Image 1: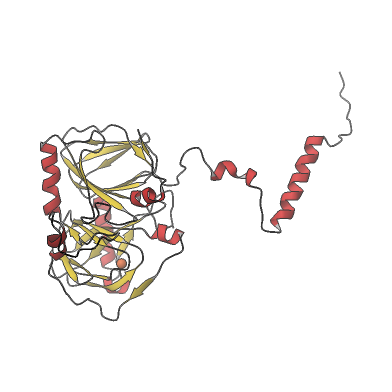
Image 2 (image 1 turned 90 degrees about the horizontal axis):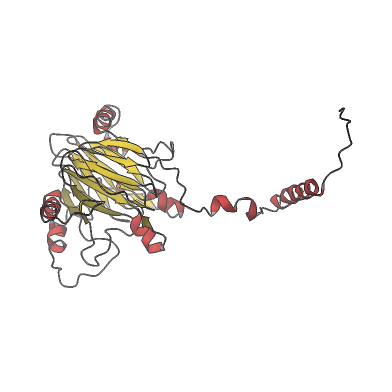
Length: 352
Ligand SMILES: [Fe+2]
């Protein structure tokens, strides 16, 4: 049967769509927009993340960081750091939406000058021995596995009087600070701070189940360096005692010894020992987590993707992606996330 062309008259539906579009165009000129057009994107049923699971292998990282040592001095760079950029957020200087991570190197004889900033920083020492971080007058010499804290506005500088390069993982909360547009920073005239306390004073004063008289509770830990020499035997002892979480292994959380709370209000860290053959139960939580392997080798399955890791490798698990660890040999994993910030805001969730 032949089809004859008919003149289309606008349907009521077409009419209302056209009226809506015209309305949206008019309100846009007054800096307004209809929520109903974007509601499902801004109030999602489950967390949506741009963070991708990823592993940075230490062999690559070390050789590239060493190469950078021939291109720029620590003093010129202020901090000679290669950023670990999440592949889902290239160019944004972040490993998760809220955290920066990088690997810093300091060569023998170099100094990274004193400064301070609102962003809190932690260092987890990967390689080398005998460089120091001076934090508010305490010069903390660092060894692999040590966990060093530079809290909000704490003056800090680094130096390496040893004869070997030293590398560590830096993690800062500045993407979160910048989200609030609340960043301040300043440099100091002098490159190095005057030393006011002995190396290890803060750990000795506050890290032994006693507290000096008059110690006040603050939102950050008074300990500068949680040494591996002190923390590793604890998780080893937990492992031997069978105190092994089926998801995380024999794990301790680094705590502020005065309050029992996290070491910083914005970031929290943990150290776990996984026995050889460990096959963790699946776990997920809303805090995207950075892991660094201090010892051993294994893999972590994240949302169906397998990340293989060995000593000094760094890997990241995005928020609310299910993951489980497997240890090929007895392994130690350091981890850090923004969990304390989420808990303080009442938004942290965990699940299986
Ligand atoms: Fe800094």
